[in-house]
Image (cartoon, rainbow, N blue to C red; front, side, top):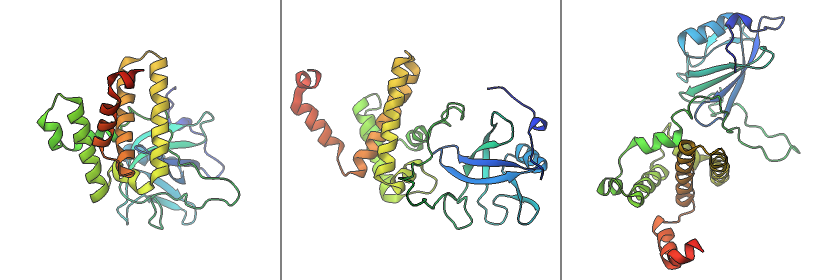
Length: 247
């Protein structure tokens, strides 16, 4: 990826470029808007999104009246330098209807809409991946009891994930997963499984450790979502015995 100057952007005849705004944590597409040269400059200078309103023919700062601002994490131009992708940390809804994303209406006959949360490699260092943030949010009791035991760590994380399901704190990635439901959680388990395979094939040990950690986290979310206790998995492994597990 090469770096370009803002002046190199190719604006249309109205002096605008289309902008896709994407959640930096979840990779969900939030909205499509337009920027002028001035709004693009203010976005970079101030670290929050500014757009050009075509209906009002004026600059507008996202969240100026609603408070739902968008903190900019990265700005990427496309191959023709005539469109932008802006990765943000949203402080509330992106849509004027109060919805998280403006993209809410599935076209009849177009099949099932797949959530836009694939993980672009250029999109910042996994953004201290949301699942990493979950691990750092608290030191669960069971993990503190045996801080060096993997089992205790997983048990503590399970407890934390379970509390997120009950309490649904705002701006929590785990809350986001539960609110999107089983299909979303399964999709993330599939993605993390694929990324674990890729890391292993690339013989990248640090990446493999990171991806296995992400996979374990999402598996715990899946267990909580389906009401399966971690002790049930432990009992099944014990029932099989080491020989049975490794056969």
